[in-house]
Length: 295
Image (cartoon, rainbow, N blue to C red; front, side):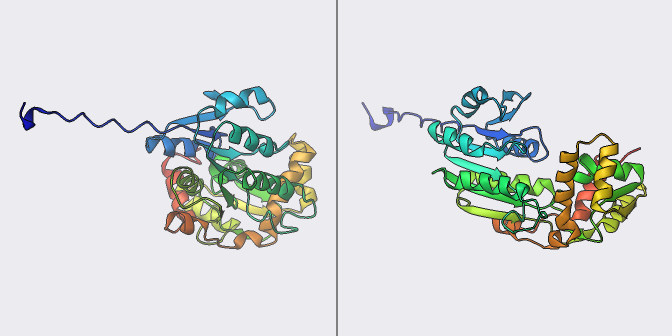
């Protein structure tokens, strides 16, 4: 037998990566995380109460099948009854290696959301749960989402021609949700993000009148901003059928804009991705091109 007749066995193919579970996979951040992971070739379980992977925060029988065999979990907490600590325990028992939690900017600053500490307390409890889980963890603390203007709470006001909010003359460094998703995917799939808390914002503060001017310039749709008092805002939402508790949550979320807290530029996108965050004007241009705010 000659040396050339000996054939080396073909190398074994690399094993397929374990899937990543995305809780809230149909939401603003979740569906973008799902898309980015899929585009990167990472198997994904998009989880929600009605999603392809069923997950219900209030039904623990849905947790085990969702967690089985996954390498990491992107967590969007349940607002009304956070159960992140219980989920973190179940994830550790299932062999999950990494948790990435969507929290919020300012939760560690007393009074950031006004006198009622419930908003901050819920997020801080979730952060403590992932930090104490024994797993690799990353916490994302974004400010107000830019996408609230085309697919969220502010869209109706833009379309009606008047945005009525208890935000005073404050401005915010609106964060593009695409940037949040990019940081989440990096934390789920790359080294170097374990134990990091990333505070996320856009690159500059933009006032609400400037927001509406940018949208108008891109679309021809004119709208004005009318500042309201908090009681008037809650009363108006109540007249529209919004429960008082939900209206109070929105008012608390807008309080840091009113107080100027949300004008701060944070460095989380640059730290996580090595680049600057997307400018609000770029978000508006892309949203308008995709058909946002059409009559």
